[in-house]
Image 1 (tube, helix red, strand yellow):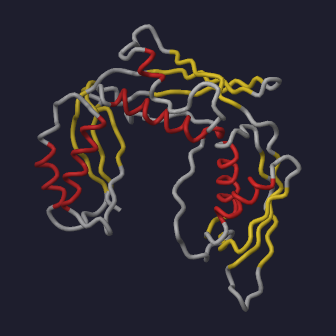
Image 2 (cartoon, rainbow, N blue to C red):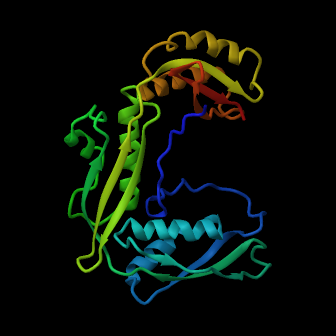
Image 3 (spheres, helix red, strand yellow):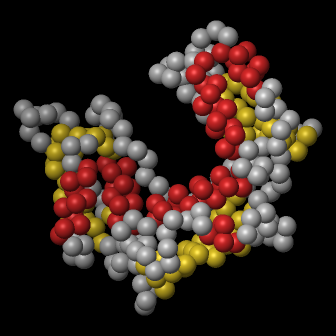
Length: 271
């Protein structure tokens, strides 16, 4: 049975991925020559700042809309909306893949963070409430920032993971006080049970012969010990040096062995 290590993150708490350089050959992917935001409620300085951040980059236009929405929600516009893109291709003589893109943007009011409530079952009291709250870098009363909340959720997951709770889950539920322009957050937590490291599994083709064998030998350092996400990262950092970083990538998925629910296996998937 596959362990679901996840957070049921709503669109409000989406965290932007790092922009990537990629060829503009797929449908809907363009190098942004000029980005224009049309808005009646977003200050001109903010519009210019966001436009400058993306002009010159290469994006799928749907992804670009998502990134713009994240930028807005990181500056307090918690209920912002980004419309359908209007795309105008730049003259082919300049570049066949360049485009000017326009979005209609509605931000609504700017919100502040009204605090956080963490709820757990009667047995989910491994850490004191003050330590749990400290995982979130956003102070009460600060301008709301969706990415900061997302990072706090990741730190919360890692905190429980360091204590053996590989199957920890959390569901964030925002509550909007529209008259006062405040966002409060309730997070329902389920820590699951503490587990030990089980087997090391592999998928895909080794980047070179002997990689899997070498990693299996090194895995004996962890197998049978209490699961610890931080210890796992350190182990992977040390032992992933056995393959070329430009030809292989490790992707980790956790499983519970059906015969032993007290262990978690770690899967390494070679690209």
